[in-house]
Amino acid sequence: MTYVFAVGPPPFSRKALFLARSIRRLTNDRTVMAFVAQSERDLIPNDVMAELGSLVTVVEGQIPIPSYPLSAKIAAMVEARRRSQDDTVVLLDTDMILLAEPSFNHSHDEALSVKPVDLSGRGGLQHREFWEQVYDILDIAFPERRLTSTIDREPIFPYWNAGVVASSDPSFAREWLDATRRLYRTLEDPDRFVDQVALGAISTKYGISVINERDNYPLTHHFGVPADVRILHYHRYAHLHRVPNPRIWQVLADIGLAGHLWGHRSPAHYHAVVRSLWHVSKRAAYLRAADSYDSGRE
Image 1 (cartoon, rainbow, N blue to C red):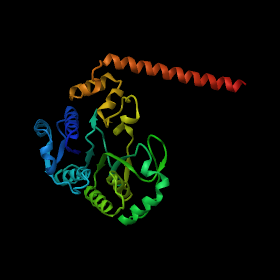
Image 2 (image 1 turned 135 degrees about the horizontal axis):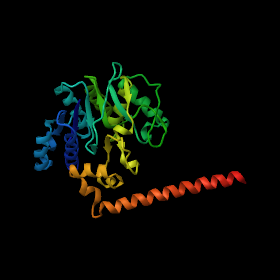
Image 3 (image 1 turned 180 degrees about the horizontal axis):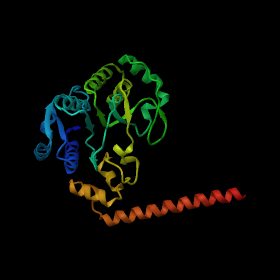
Image 4 (image 1 turned 180 degrees about the vertical axis):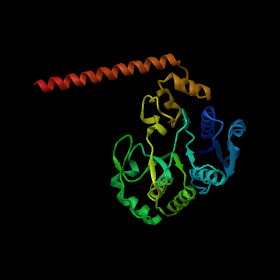
């Protein structure tokens, strides 16, 4: 299994370094690649580039859609697939850390591992006309499959969170890039999620192993982290205070993220906050149960 991520200019470059440290904290055996766009190289701090070079293989290349910088992440996966001898390539967003190694075991009829989006948004069934246009542009049959978004629990068309994308198919990354390019050129109003839209559409051509929040845990929508989470998707540093887990605090300290976790407050302060919220939630649950009981007696 090969890990790959696109570095990007600040603040993404520093997050990429934290991600690389979290991977190397777990294993020195995996191939790990960091893709740096040549047009952004001078924007990345030298100390970040130096340490990345000591931890992973740094690969430079072009942003395939210059006016859409997010396409660099797909280029990263294309490059990793071209260079890697491993069966599976795992593309990661930089705003993640690995707490434990994931396992993406693809069967003979499964070549792609992804998680449905957190919130339905563009994937909602009310946007059928948009998706019909997308499938028409890409000349892909409109799918019958429906999913459920993981946070608001709404029915959606195939629409995936692109923070973790694992594939064992040699042609997948290139096809994803080609589809993103076609949609960006053709849609009347392509937005910053066009790569995600392209991922949703072409995914219908592959056997899919649907992953859950264990391997792509959206901290922005939660308070607390279950013990079995392996990939923490924290999005912003400000969300790290939602981690009431001393084991994860130690991981964050080990990779240099502790300062973003606590700011000017101590771990004891946040531990007290978490305990207070836990007691409040228990009290609220008790009151709801009591109200329900009383209503039943009336």
